[in-house]
Every structure is written in structure tokens, then in C-alpha cells.
Image (cartoon, rainbow, N blue to C red):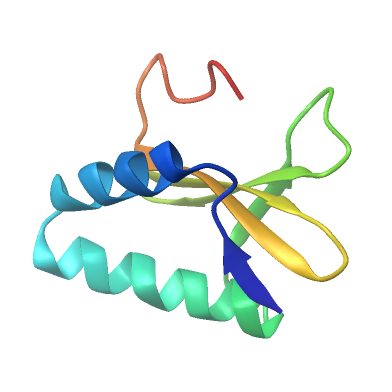
Length: 90
């Protein structure tokens, strides 16, 4: 299984949002993404988003990782700290 970004501007968006996190938070995000990629969801707070069949979120403290899961690929949609705007435009 591999991670994909659907559009080039998604790469910029994800990179920009990762730069807002501290080094420790980036390491935490990296570990979460590795768990998702390997399919081991132990100790992860994962929830399917309402109204979408294939979109999920991982919650770790104030960090939210929102992704779309298909049979062969994982599409990263958002990585950011929780705010009122976190779940908009997904």
C-alpha cells in the first residue's frame, strides 16, 4: 500500500501544514502514517467521516490526519491541528 496525493497542490498544502508542527509533532505524524501504511491500526483513534464511504480521520491530541482509503492506495487529504475549519472542503 502506498500514499498518494491526488493533485500537485495537495503536495504543497501537506508540506505547508507539516511545517507548522514542531519536530516532535512531525515525528508523531510520521509514526501514525507508517502505522496506517502498514495496516496496523493499534492505538489509533480512527473514525469514518459521516456522509463519506471512504474518508477517515485519525485523531491524536489536537492533530488530525484525514485520508481517503482505496483498495491499493491511501490518499492524504489533510494534516493539521484541530480547528473549526478542519473538516470543511473534504
